[in-house]
Image (cartoon, rainbow, N blue to C red; front, side, top):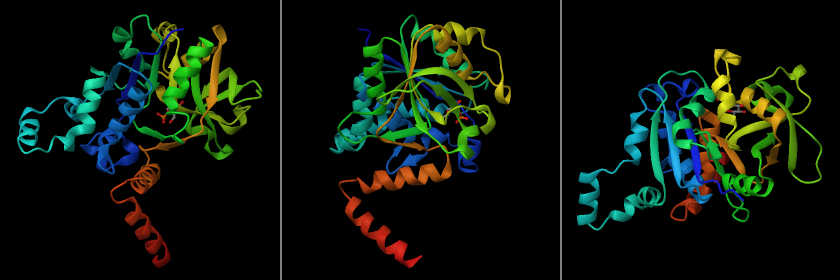
Length: 293
Ligand code: G1P
């Protein structure tokens, strides 16, 4: 049984869906309640037992690297004033995992971003968590990434997370054609990136959480640009699924596309409502405001 110990977090996109905010601030650094999106993603990986987290950041995204770095002056000041709890979440993450940063020198697509992590991945299987999506779970089954890691350990082959989308939305996602199954884990037949509605046989969309056998990397090395003139991860996944079993698993929790304005607002509201300090008061405010407007 191979345990998944390494995860890649691609965070190299330009964030054009969130302009003007993302002109100077990487979308992964936008705040959900009191922490940047990327911290939630890293915490999800750690919760799944990941020990090495490889951030793939693009040009101008040094704020992500700096965020995980120690900040001597600030930490010393907080320690002297007895306020270290203010950075507790971040320090916990730094203690539990190695955060490794790799620069994607050219924006050649998600497949290329994943390939940039190959020197650190070595020969191991690995997880991929897209850096602008966050997930919340039902508190019973564990995070989405830990569910995928468990399934990978059981099956011994790649497993990807999927959700059913409406016809009108299929062209925004990678879409998986899957075999029928009695449970929520389906064998993948093929995958296609951002198809037209008439090109698909199912509406199972890839949600940005994956666990791959290492052989994906050799397929990515050979990959050429396709959709949007980018090297697409989905193309190499499709080839992998033809050579080796691949599973698609539908998730019981909630996923937010926090790189999209509406998804970002929903994530903020839901996470704020669960906040132990002010969640109840915030709920009252939302009820009051929804009556008023
Ligand atoms: C990427 C992937 C796509 C996947 C999506 C999930 O697309 O290429 O297969 O369905 O993430 O959010 P992007 O959102 O970068 O266009």
